[in-house]
Image (cartoon, rainbow over all chains, first blue to last red; front, side, top):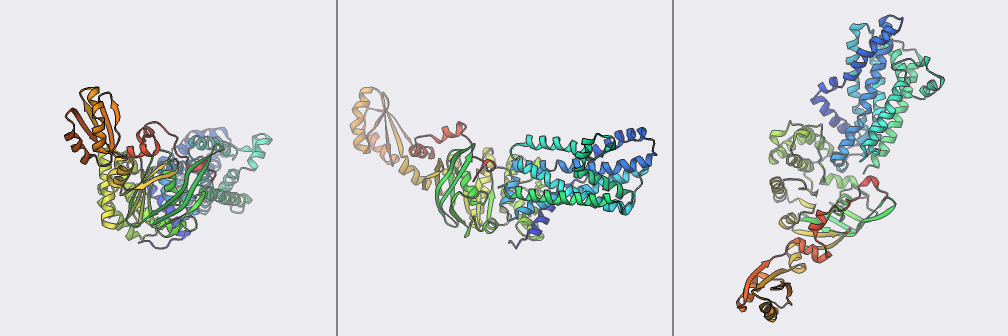
Length: 254
Length: 328
């Protein structure tokens, strides 16, 4: 009955399994956009009101940041699914199956790319009537960058889950303690230019900050901007580090 | 199908060494139905986890379905089914989807996995629930889904860790009906752990009694009971004098020295109580009551360890250390 398996096929099968609940219930993707919509609806007007610039320009600055926020908050909690599967026995079942250990991590991390692309595209399109202008090619490249960021950040969330096994307070504690500094120090909500020196130094080592800058350039169609390159570099480093520590943690998880 | 030699697992929990399993030697033939019986923390699950490649042994070797668990885990995994203590299906998944994913994990084709999934859903009475979310299933339904997931690739050996813990009697009976059916139709080798005495007694052909990480007995339930426990005959009399006077007669007919069960009662342990009792009854005019109690596996455990398995299960013994605290 069984045929041969390969790590690539294993990874594909793991990713497909993770995607099944999303495909079965696509509305869940829209429902989890509630938080970014709240930020767009309640924080956006404050930004618009507090700035002398026209609405379109403020949105061009703010909306790409909100898209990164979707990835940050959506993917940041994804490890909790694995955490729960470790508690129920579902993860153990996959460890007994003839799957390569790395595929269990890579497949899960790859899956994170799909909801991000769908959600970010929905938000970007929804804001267009309010004055957000989109460069289509820039948006497509921007979504690719965002999904690469999601892959690495998702891998880190899974790593945290593997490290927090049987201690879910640790997962939530670390997740909460890191996600807000990462967000604020990315200049996603408010520009960092007016912040103190130490904040700008801290932001310089925050990969999210480079991704946010790159998204702003890309959505504006400014492909030549060096921040695009920096954004891809930061997301790539994050993906490599995330997958490396994640695979290591997965191999040690039995 | 299973061959283990000197299989040993030591954990380090809070800097203290815990000998979870010590020197396990094991031979299980194709088609056998074997149960590990013992209290919590006896090393049953740890043994099973080593045999199913989930836990590397500290020392010793094990071959399962012809492959070494340490050097060839992928080949072992391909050939075994494992149903752990928890629930195998993902909470966010739908019933049939999980079976299809599981089939893909074992390298089955889409069509092959779909056909097998539908067969299993049918035979495990899960067909009406195929599109249901796993979270919406009852405990018994989830356990049946666990079985289906463990069987998707028609494994040669099925390992079950405490398969019926937490199930109501009806679901337990139903579960066992499926396990026995599987064995009858496919000759699957079945290896399980249990702390339910009646379960081991009723279904397992061979019982390995485990305590403190060691196998302390290995035989059929009937043989274990007759060699290790024996039948207890309790004889009641009208007065203490009658009881005392009957002692020599009882010893003559039973071949065993009776003990004083109460001031007016004697108790004697014999291997074949049902044959001995009528003779004793006929030989004693003063007898007021007579009772025969045939042994349970608990009596076997009591005679092996001096402790009752029921007491052990009732009091909370520390659970077996789980893998994450482990320094192997």
